[in-house]
Image (cartoon, rainbow, N blue to C red; front, side):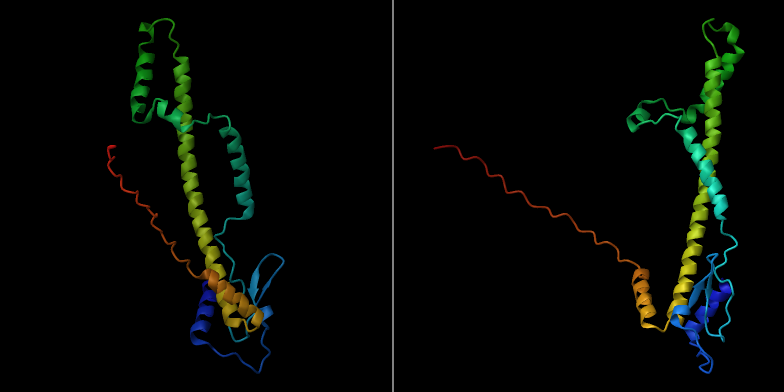
Length: 218
């Protein structure tokens, strides 16, 4: 990828002339796409490029992404078993948070003093709740870690995709000679330009008419 991109940059900067004694590729043949989706630039013979400039060995195979999607579908089925809590309900619920140490110690002390507790108190329920919370906490921590890694992968994939399209765009600008391709390059150039920041318009405030004091009747 770097060799191909650098070759395009060199051509753009130096504008190395083609050998006119040899047939040059048409603008329509500036690049060809194979059956496997590989894009191969068809440029003048005196330009040295990487034969597979768009190969990305770091890209996650689509099969692996499909497997992750299947795993995500299973996670969604499990998540559907959990309650959906509204914002108002969250405000009313007791928050464990920093009191986790207190709750854990209560269970420990109660188990050690079980013989001193009233006979009707069964610790199996609270032990089940404790195990459920700890398992969910571990699961959520793992999901956050995995999601952060996928977010990094998405950024890296988008960066590679954008860099590749920039390289192809430079090739179209450099080797495109037909009016049709020139028009396409012009359209792409307008899209590439950074959009202007939206203008923030201050709200129009209509002044209220002055309130006149009431005039007593004569």
